[in-house]
Length: 307
Image (cartoon, rainbow, N blue to C red; front, side, top):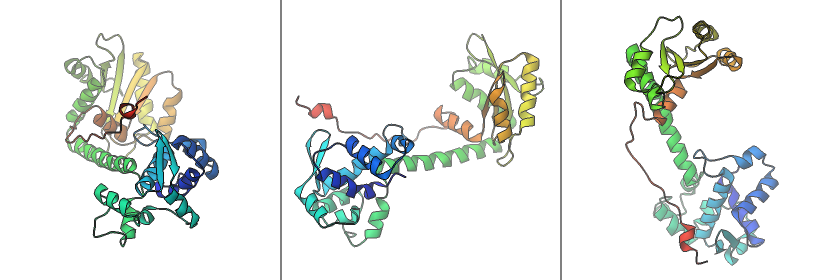
């Protein structure tokens, strides 16, 4: 398990005391000492832009630099300062935000960053430690995941409260937004054709109609999964129509036997459950709209390079 960035402060400072180093080198040595698996070493933040271990080491280094324990003599490199080495000489069991708060310069920085108020100071260590358990990126990702989960639940509730016709139109809007169906008019006309057994509609895969996708939709309440018999009936309809591609959409879930069943078929069957449906709606802006954009910026190292 990858330690949180506060737990990493002490080992990072120890390695920095050995001499000038880089985040990548420190990450490799810490991963080896902790016996991290290859999956843990390569685990990415939800944003997919940085490894979790590297991110936590970066913030451990950054916070310690604000306390005067670490200095950066060159781009991308860092080393322990005399103050950092003096702290290590006291053989601390742990270095964390609460300990760094003893340094006036860090306390000033942390208060301005929003981590603590001036009145809290060092006395409210519990709240300081709790608020600094995760790195800023992880806090942003966690907040985004929470908001997305709440939005998915709200979308499903609204879909179930509307009519079956609304659900069909939603699927049209989503598939067209994803690039299928040619146009809303053509897609709606195709999807409106029912009565072919387990098939609820037919959709052109492209604007020229060179291939077709057959669609089945089940508006089930959560806790009422679509089983293999329903999927089998859909597949049987495709076979009867000579079709090779189908999409089965539900607002609930698919049973494991149903998912296993479609893995080895000659036909290409895509199963979209409630969570996948709402994820696609969010990704393709169907039934949702942006209400707030926050831009985060990073230092441009090339700008400051004099080489």
